[in-house]
Length: 231
Image 1 (cartoon, rainbow, N blue to C red):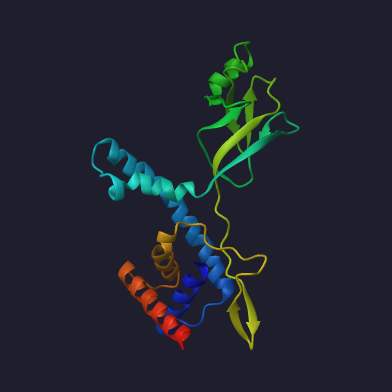
Image 2 (image 1 turned 45 degrees about the horizontal axis):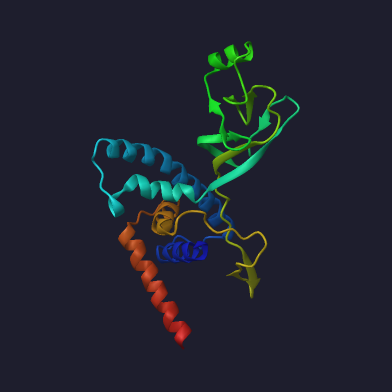
């Protein structure tokens, strides 16, 4: 997908006499656009979920909360957590959000998140147990009670998307797409987001296009490529 986005953005900017975009410029904007789109899923999901709870959304293709969750679920991940020197567990470095009921101990024993005042009470009492463990988050760490839990803690979470990178090789002073480069990274968004990625990227360069415009440009480019490949 990343080369398709690059070619569309480059074509539109050239048509609008905005100059040629460099790979470095493209990658910087691509990273920001991906972050913006992905971050927007969570607000959209909450909004549509609220509408669904009130009976305002449809089923199947009209089920927007389900569509958004599918886009988020592309980045589902799981990790075993390690106890650090402060007797806390380090969270994954690529953590975006911990899933609901996403922390477990042993064989799927749920670790419940509780408020700081409740956690302080449990810390000073003998009520915490490995049957009903609890935790509170401290930045990039979690503290788990009871303190006898020092291993076998797993975290199910949504990870941060990897930064997209359009990689290339230079041939006759022309940058040619190279998907085989070791640092190549495609967008980690659902394929249906291609028009939105292009639209948002172009907006960073001061151009405002609609979905229909982007779709038409992509189809025109595909037809030209098909004709070229056939000859």
